[in-house]
Length: 174
Ligand code: IMP
Ligand code: MG
Image (cartoon, rainbow, N blue to C red; front, side, top):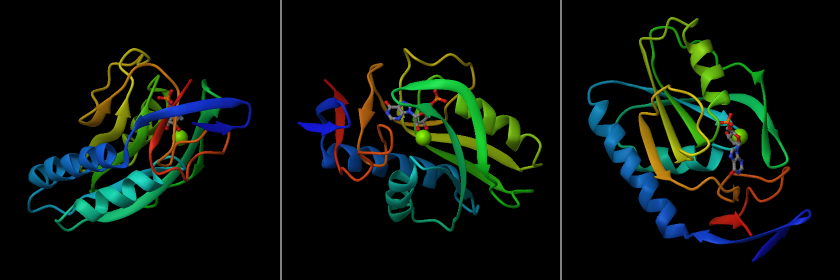
């Protein structure tokens, strides 16, 4: 059990379960991007740990970039997504957006709208976690690590008001 701010969390996914999901995703992406040099676009802050491991398992040529967005306050989405740091030049690139978790889909919709103005060659979405019960959009999520119930989680890059990102397993709100 861990306590972050005022809330208690209990163990949900082990280090090995997470690594297996990340490895599977890397292998699928590798197969789909043979002969290409995709650019992994990590969404900060949450995706930093996932992207770091994903790249270690990815064997083809690739590049990495980051963009920073924020939509969460506490344990619920505010619906208002702000871009805090641009991703650099993505023109004619095969972009793979790397998200820690897709919840309502607001963040994803915002990113996809931006990519459409950047003249990218192609884009796909990879998310380590996906909450189907919370998802309100129709955009396809191309690569999903694990589908999870609509419960708040922390660890492996995911936070509750800034805390918990450094936990190497996933914990769920009690
Ligand atoms: P969305 O815009 O509602 O899809 O939310 C996406 C963002 O909210 C993610 O990138 C996370 O940063 C954050 N988020 C959503 N669900 C959780 C959760 O269960 N724990 C921690 N952060 C979350
Ligand atoms: Mg986030």
